[in-house]
Length: 117
Length: 116
Image 1 (tube, one colour):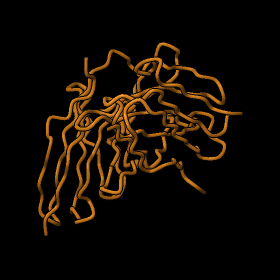
Image 2 (image 1 turned 180 degrees about the horizontal axis):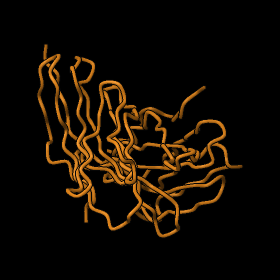
Image 3 (image 1 turned 45 degrees about the vertical axis):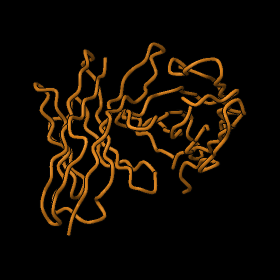
Image 4 (image 1 turned 120 degrees about the vertical axis):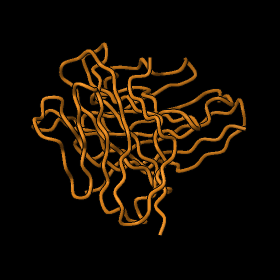
């Protein structure tokens, strides 16, 4: 069963506006971590922001913030003051402990964000 | 500090041929991961090395895929013989445990493999 769900295949936003990219997750582990990565057209995966399950406050990194609602199992990414360079694919991921006890990432299908002038 | 590098960036091969992908992790990172994204689908975990040891290869599709990590440094992923469904982008990532235990994974630019 898919453990990370990104329901928005594509999103459009105008420059300087804020946008929210949705992510819901499913896990029975009490300890987990949630990540957002950006993949521009050049292909590399860029780490944006991390939220630990025990973190009391929502994570923020510059213009990126994570709206973490633990009871709803959602970890939405908010980008404030969008810029043209924000146009990219965005992936939500969850750190999962595998059968060996080591960690790996489980990804959603991604959301393509297009920022227009 | 150099990031994760992958070679080649693109590879186009015919069905039945062999291809070897290479990943150089960030220096000093013990953890090395391979992931794959097939067009339009999610990025999926393939396997995980700690130094030279395979810790988890539960995501490897079948025995046509062979991964090695020589001396705990760079890693190779060989596909032999390649099939059409192997087409996709293969990502490598490396990590070292952070103080807060978050194991942030740093990704390489990926290798786009096309099997025709």
